[in-house]
Amino acid sequence: MRPPMLRDRETGETLVEGIVAVGIIGVVLVTLIGLVGTAISMGAVRDAQARSQAVVRSVYEAVAAYPASPAGALTCADTAVIADITRVVGQVPVPDGVIVGTPSVFARYLPSTSATPRPVVSTRPCPDTDAPAGAVPLGLAVTIRVTASGSGRAGQSWSDSMTVLVGRQL
Image (cartoon, rainbow, N blue to C red; front, side):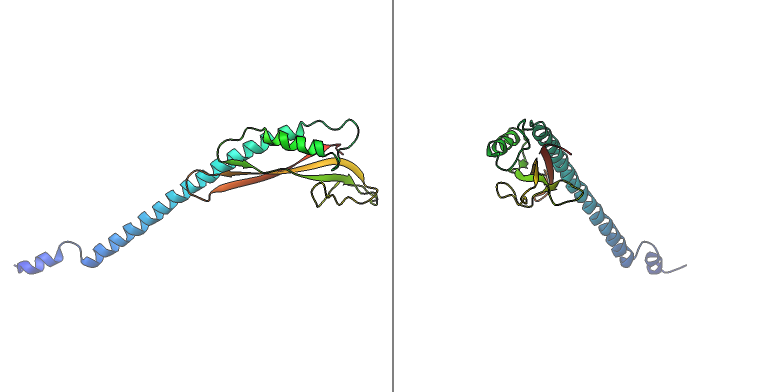
């Protein structure tokens, strides 16, 4: 027969086993909490992206439907047209948390010096176009930036920008 003290020592778990088990459980819980946080954050970004892209489509359709000038190609000198395009963009319904930036309007032209003419967009917005002398005006390029903030964590947002060509197409 064994003494009772030895029998008690041989049953149960040691302190080291208990600490290792608690450590493993802690690491698993921290990992799971991180994954849940990432999933929530990505959901907010996807929501912002969807709202931003819906507004981009609406703005694109509104600006693309703008009639071309019957008198010829639109140019940076057509300030009334540029103001009207800005007004059209401002009338697009925008949900909460979505910001539509002010349109930037650039001149589109065909350079007169190119052997194989391809449309070029000026590098400076109207009214300060950098179209060279003799260039053939084609119309306007309207660039708009749309930003949607995500729900949830601060700082989660999505931005889209687009360029719509207004005027003669090649």
